[in-house]
Image 1 (cartoon, helix red, strand yellow):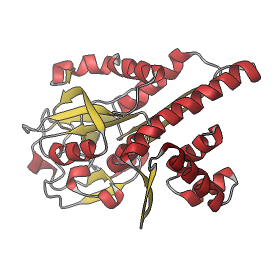
Image 2: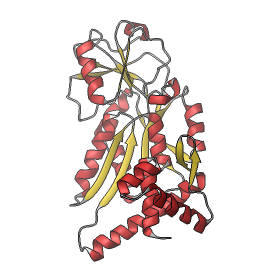
Image 3: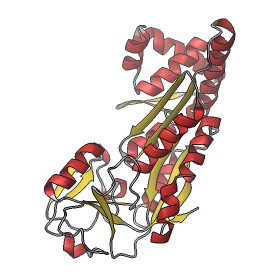
Image 4: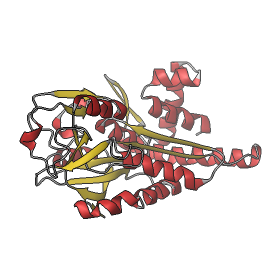
Amino acid sequence: MTLQQLRYCIMVVEKGSISEAAKTLFVTQPSLTSAIQELENEFHITIFNRTNRGIVLSSEGAEFMSYARQVVEQAELMEEKYRYRGNIKQRFQISSQHYSFVVDAFKNLIKECEMEDYDFSLRETKTSEIIDDVKNLRSEIGILYLTDFNQKVLNRYLKENKLEFHELFQAKPHIFIGEQHPLAHKEKIQLEELTDYPYLSYEQGEYNSFYFAEEMLSTVPKRKSIKVSDRATIFSLMLSLNGYTVSTGIIGDNLKAGTILAKPIDTNETIRVGYITNKKAVVSEIGNLYLKKLSELPIFCQMAEKEIIIL
């Protein structure tokens, strides 16, 4: 086993294919494939399963990659400390559905770390890709939600991929609308009142089913529906078209106060927001600090009176 072989495997996981990893590493595909096969033969395991759609980590491969990343990271720390005599670069990756409070905690994490060198990544993405990122150890934490409707399917998907859900808080569904929206004056919204307004949601790619939808109450029929891929677009359409989306009701610091309003929906549905981790990996010190920053957000305390339960 060599560090180079471990780095090859890590790059294949990050790129999702042998060909893309080979391009990034400036090696030929046969050389990369051979290096991985030598590693598999040495340890008598199958790290990657070969399928018609490409390669994916096997169950034992996911466990192996957890150790491989630790070995490579420790080796890099030693090089930075002793060979280059530089500052140790901290690394942290997180994948999440589109929540402003996730960004707020991320900013607070960086402010507290007070480090000269770091390599952090916050990826707001599709539900299925959050799960894949944590499964393949591209991210050590993924943030998403469960409800009575989607939890049976998602829990099975998490279990199959050796992932664990940790609940952060519970909330009642709210709509996000602009301050000029015709329903902005109402204290509570009835679902039938939303019929004439565009429903805004995040597209989910090939997993574009109700179970993977980022918005609660996604099965309720909509006359007007618009799918987008990023948060800036959804808020722009919300303000310009009197559109709405469904979320937790938590408006973070990175949204202009008063521009976007959160209004509770008259429903018995409950949202369970939490984070997922890979059972075969240990959350890093930086990861635990991020979770602490998440729990310390003032907005959680402020929303406690509005049926948010912090766990």
